[in-house]
Length: 373
View 1 (cartoon, one colour):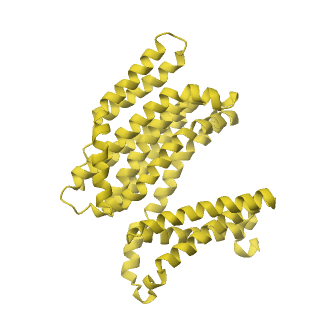
View 2 (spheres, rainbow, N blue to C red):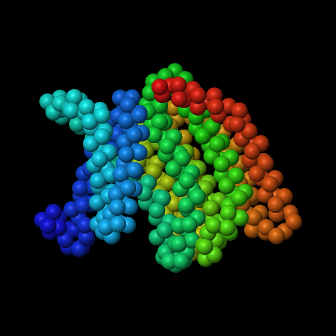
View 3 (tube, one colour):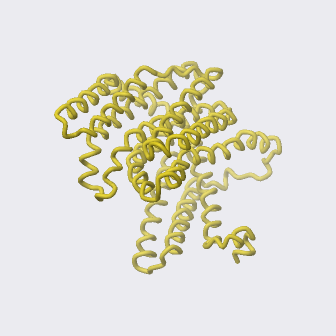
């Protein structure tokens, strides 16, 4: 069966090809109908479909893996059925057949959509490479054990990314809706700056507690991972800022600019990781990623000038980032009497620099929510 489906898969003897293809097809349709539900203002259907997908997947995992002992095939079956059930829910809830008219297909529209979407395909690959290539450099220059430590350190930035992705679901619609408004420059700039301020405060708080928390809950051989959390968190901040700016390019239908700036950042990440990792180990890789994403933010702000003038509070962003790095480095000498003084002073400095977000965040996101109703 594998050979009929794909000689390439058969040649490399890749298992579970049929179920992978079913998952791929179901995922494509599920994502398409989910995005369509957002586009027509059916946000509740979008949210419920995600919950149904997660609940079905988790329940079937328990049945297939725990009770039936189906191992990998059980996991993949649960993954596919979870997507399929959620897809059926979205399709029926939207009454999607009412929106499907094959006679309305026009070659001109297909070409226009392809021009818009094609650059996003290599962009996604480049973005994946920029995020995950670090593991290959660590494996090559440092070793398998270091990759495990890096994976543990990356768990904390993953939380920041998950929170941002939740925000991003709504922001994509807002970015498109506000693109034609007269105050779009101010609106985009305010949301970006407040988003950065909240993340900076959150990161500063995490750094304050990361070492004692790791000592309590992480296995002894991975406890040193806390050292690398700071540059990875700042890398996540800059990565999220880049994604935010990328959405504006998409709203302007300038997807080629998204691709070019992503490639630019990916090349910087690869070059710096290749140079830094052999000498500085995981630290070198983490800082390479942080620097690359920061440069990508700068490049995207510059590229957007012909479309939207984004006013980033660079002084606040850079000074807060430096204080967070000082806060993290001071934890190395935790036994020194001045260590906690420097750590707390740095944390308070970040809090003071970004104090305005505490008072105005509710107002900004109140406007944001109102515009998305």
